[in-house]
Image (tube, rainbow, N blue to C red; front, side, top):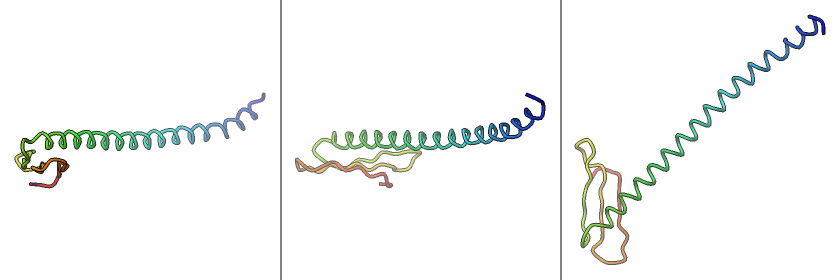
Length: 93
């Protein structure tokens, strides 16, 4: 190959390499965002399941609050009747 042919090939391949590089960076960013959202949702789901189990453990029904940073953050409530589900709410008690 002559230098003119190499220049022609480089004229096409270099921009394609830059395009592929930026496409991979964007794909990596999108995957990181999706992974972060998935992990956050899973963490919140596990935390909520733990809180429901804590509310179900209340003896003979009743209510309890959990505080975060000095403010009521979780409210647990369990019916005194058997068969009723325990409830947990994230709003301030």
